[in-house]
Image (cartoon, rainbow, N blue to C red; front, side, top):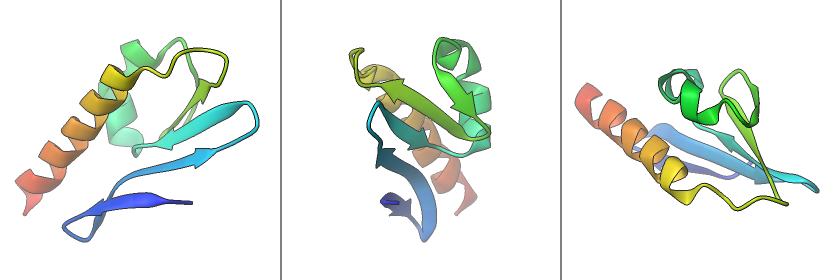
Length: 75
Protein backbone atom coordinates (compact mmCIF):
# COMPACT_ATOMS: atom_id res chain seq x y z
CA UNK A 1 0.00 0.00 0.00
CA UNK A 2 1.54 3.35 -1.00
CA UNK A 3 2.24 5.85 1.74
CA UNK A 4 3.66 9.31 2.12
CA UNK A 5 6.13 9.75 4.95
CA UNK A 6 7.18 12.83 6.91
CA UNK A 7 10.10 12.87 9.34
CA UNK A 8 10.29 9.09 9.04
CA UNK A 9 6.66 8.63 10.16
CA UNK A 10 3.64 7.70 8.04
CA UNK A 11 1.72 10.76 6.93
CA UNK A 12 -1.06 9.02 5.03
CA UNK A 13 -1.64 5.74 3.22
CA UNK A 14 -3.96 5.19 0.26
CA UNK A 15 -5.14 2.39 -1.99
CA UNK A 16 -7.42 1.95 -4.97
CA UNK A 17 -10.16 -0.67 -5.01
CA UNK A 18 -12.80 -1.59 -7.61
CA UNK A 19 -15.49 0.61 -6.03
CA UNK A 20 -13.67 3.06 -3.77
CA UNK A 21 -10.43 4.77 -2.83
CA UNK A 22 -9.24 3.87 0.65
CA UNK A 23 -7.57 6.60 2.68
CA UNK A 24 -5.72 5.70 5.85
CA UNK A 25 -4.77 8.75 7.87
CA UNK A 26 -4.48 6.97 11.24
CA UNK A 27 -7.19 6.86 13.93
CA UNK A 28 -6.38 10.23 15.52
CA UNK A 29 -7.03 12.02 12.22
CA UNK A 30 -10.30 10.20 11.67
CA UNK A 31 -11.44 11.11 15.18
CA UNK A 32 -10.64 14.78 14.51
CA UNK A 33 -12.68 14.77 11.27
CA UNK A 34 -15.42 12.35 12.41
CA UNK A 35 -18.35 14.64 11.64
CA UNK A 36 -17.12 15.40 8.11
CA UNK A 37 -16.40 11.73 7.43
CA UNK A 38 -19.73 10.49 8.82
CA UNK A 39 -21.31 10.04 5.37
CA UNK A 40 -18.55 7.65 4.25
CA UNK A 41 -17.95 4.01 5.15
CA UNK A 42 -15.16 3.84 7.73
CA UNK A 43 -12.98 1.51 9.70
CA UNK A 44 -10.55 2.23 12.51
CA UNK A 45 -8.26 4.78 10.90
CA UNK A 46 -9.65 4.33 7.39
CA UNK A 47 -12.30 5.85 5.19
CA UNK A 48 -13.71 4.73 1.86
CA UNK A 49 -14.45 7.32 -0.82
CA UNK A 50 -16.75 5.71 -3.42
CA UNK A 51 -15.76 6.13 -7.05
CA UNK A 52 -19.30 7.12 -8.06
CA UNK A 53 -19.09 10.33 -5.98
CA UNK A 54 -16.72 13.29 -6.34
CA UNK A 55 -13.59 12.94 -4.22
CA UNK A 56 -13.74 15.45 -1.32
CA UNK A 57 -10.38 17.00 -2.11
CA UNK A 58 -10.66 19.86 0.40
CA UNK A 59 -11.44 17.39 3.17
CA UNK A 60 -8.50 15.18 2.19
CA UNK A 61 -6.23 18.25 2.07
CA UNK A 62 -7.43 19.29 5.54
CA UNK A 63 -6.75 15.81 6.90
CA UNK A 64 -3.24 15.83 5.45
CA UNK A 65 -2.58 19.32 6.84
CA UNK A 66 -3.69 18.08 10.27
CA UNK A 67 -1.27 15.13 10.02
CA UNK A 68 1.58 17.43 8.92
CA UNK A 69 0.94 19.68 11.91
CA UNK A 70 0.75 16.68 14.23
CA UNK A 71 4.03 15.22 12.97
CA UNK A 72 5.95 18.50 12.87
CA UNK A 73 4.90 19.45 16.39
CA UNK A 74 6.40 16.18 17.66
CA UNK A 75 9.84 16.82 16.22
